Image (cartoon, rainbow, N blue to C red):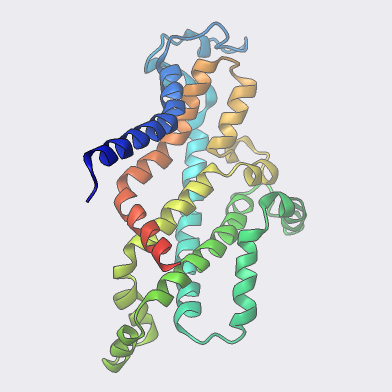
Length: 277
């Protein structure tokens, strides 16, 4: 049994680490809600410097940074990547985890290469490949490489989940006349919601925060994603910290909202995955 002194020490340590983690977030929020600074405008735009502080900083940053367009682009790219990579990961993970796939000893390590090779290594040859296909400066040039990256993780993650399911459960379903498709969607997917939600949240977070691929693959302003729009906002529209902090909060808000809605399943899926591994 844990003594009162040990419990107090545990809470004290947790509070210290919580304060350490929350301090940067609170600093950015405080700056975003604070009074406008003298460097709020780069000169040409009067709207950025006309903010009165508080919530008006977010309105000014939204207008000056044109975050409406970049947020729509990020939502479209993230939604496409999460949906496409999620469905494909379920299918490939199901195949590698429950079936005898010809050449699985070679194919699965190829998927794992997607987890090992950083984006910086492949972005230049990938750009020339997509340019040859006429896909650069399009939605597909931003989305398809991220589908491939997310598929590598999703296959690894879902394979681990499907391999952890009791073989007797699948055999019982087959004895009842269920085919492979029905076993996947009616027997294995429903109890695997935490694992699937974890994959979805991580894929959404990585896709939303991706900076290099949109920067290299698309030069059209209409195709700028939210992180890219924030970088251009800093360089072109403002040199002040207040509006930049407001823009950073705007860009980070969707990831925080998604996590808050799905945190229970996300944490459970992470813990289950850690126990399985």
